[in-house]
View 1 (tube, rainbow, N blue to C red):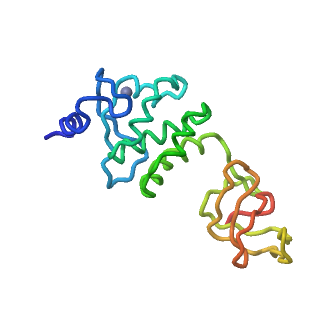
View 2: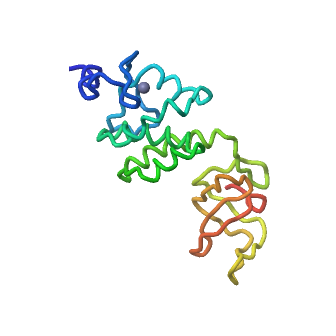
Length: 191
Ligand SMILES: [Zn+2]
């Protein structure tokens, strides 16, 4: 059987997100791990709204309160992503709170989210204006007292595998002498 036939059978010829029987098509969930079944069958309306956040009509997605309980991991992931997009409306947040997902699927669901959020334009730059990315190594360019402790992170200390503070372009995090600390980007230089 082809993938499409498989999906029609699994879904009983309905949109796996909203139940519509119109304009059904195979949809590959973006940002999916290579080794999972990431296709779902959805209708034209769902597809259009998934792809264009500006066209998202929250009322269309009320049926997620049923589809989020689908046994199909890919459907759960897409339901989670849409609920996450709409959570400002209130009821989607309530559904998210109720939703149960395996850790693996949650990571998959969030993979798409990071990409949406990181295109939001928060860029971390070091003292020279170089872009810092998660996992980079930086060197401190001055002695920095660590808040809440007697530790002073010395100038010249290198901090490996930093992570970025997502909502603040001036802060990164990394380990100095075994302690996870927040560091201001203006006091570091990327290696
Ligand atoms: Zn649909």
